[in-house]
Image 1: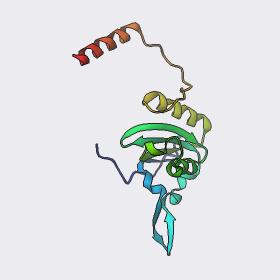
Image 2 (image 1 turned 135 degrees about the horizontal axis):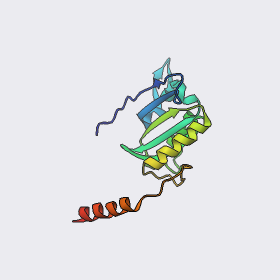
Image 3 (image 1 turned 90 degrees about the vertical axis):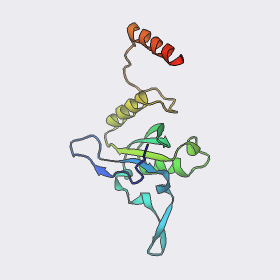
Image 4 (image 1 turned 60 degrees about the horizontal axis):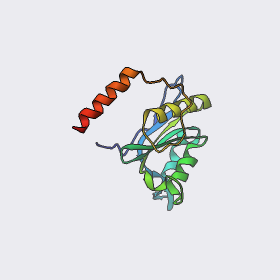
Length: 149
């Protein structure tokens, strides 16, 4: 799978819940960058949409590893990227971030992402879960038996 190293910094429509996002950006944007006016600069400081609140995904290569939310996306992602004793420090190398101002929308989106993707999250999403019908459970058993053969 080809990974987009440049990513996107896209403004959303004004009526949407997402004000901007970055997709599959490398962790290295939190490192020291090239010289600018004789000073080392940090690349991520120029990303205005990361100043606010939102939801983020940490990836291990191209697989989602952890999903979280923060009042200050840049600060939280920075902490994940530079704190060597952090819980997830050694387990991710790319991130996606979605700037979402409304707290209720952040909670719901985080819950949807956690429910949809297998990750290291220990939190259970606060979404109503539908019980799997017996017919679907039986179908899964058949599928797993076929795969074992």
